[in-house]
Length: 157
Image (cartoon, rainbow, N blue to C red; front, top):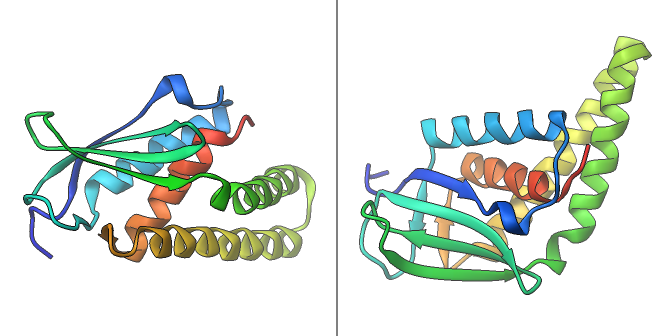
């Protein structure tokens, strides 16, 4: 993995995302921090990075606005957002159950819910990785963190 195949800066377009609660804001900040610490991001057919990435939702499409270090546009890649709606909704429901459980449920129940939450997160990140195939190569950890950001753009907790 070359040092040029990475995201150096990432922003979420505030105009195109849902109003977020404190839990989602925390998840977003952690995902961005972790993503910037370590990621693999290699868009096909454009000059080497590092890249600045802006995620936005535009006309029911998830848009990856990829820019160079000087903030000059390099490529915009759009994915149908409808592809992700079901998994985001399901993931949000499992997360809500998890956050409610950690307040009162026994540890065994919390662990079981968390296993389901992680499996659903893996499913979402694999879907994202598959949809990006041929457009942007990302490793599984980068896909996981990008999926977290995608969820944070839609959730209201």
